[in-house]
Image 1 (cartoon, rainbow, N blue to C red):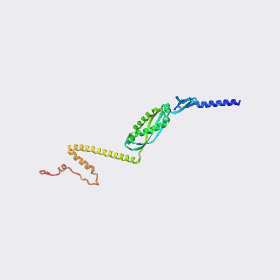
Image 2: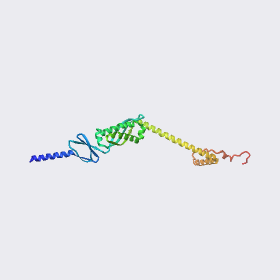
Image 3: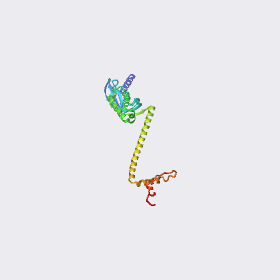
Image 4: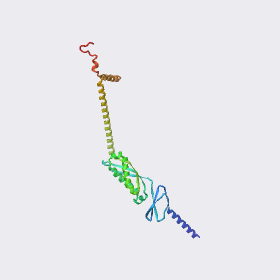
Length: 254
């Protein structure tokens, strides 16, 4: 009798072990790559998956977007400036079969490929382009990575350059360049203002030349404007034609 109970217990234990080895549950974002006696037989999931123990094996694959930090890379730009650049990589698996079979470790492979592509692409551009045209550089890197990882069943959705670090000497040089550029713009703006003012003065001079009385009115207006300044001595020229009314001419009587 005891032997019978032991036999039943052993049988139940075998069934439990069999079911625990055979039953798999995959979440909505997971897929299972199934191998039967070492050969690929299909991709299953999500939900309840039943495997034949010791005959079939399954490799789980996560289909969610993976965010990887690309370590800082030493890059020499086209204008021979040494910088350190790091980036963020966004990708996901679109073909679980190729991601498991075609590459040993798709995470490491993608990260290493991102590092080499980052150095290769940025090395073709000047420092000013790295700082001012990040969107274009991000697009170029993403396109190259997406093409090269397509054979692994991986879709690179985005690449974002995070930091472009410069040494102190280069930072000071860029600051001097920016200061010189601002001074140049200030001088150009000042020269444009002088040119416009000169053009207006020429136009005003032509208008005053057509009416000499207007010049006298301008003299009086200027004298009125400075009349309130009592702290200084004002020397004001008087037009000769105005004095002509007070000077006695030969043959005239006062």
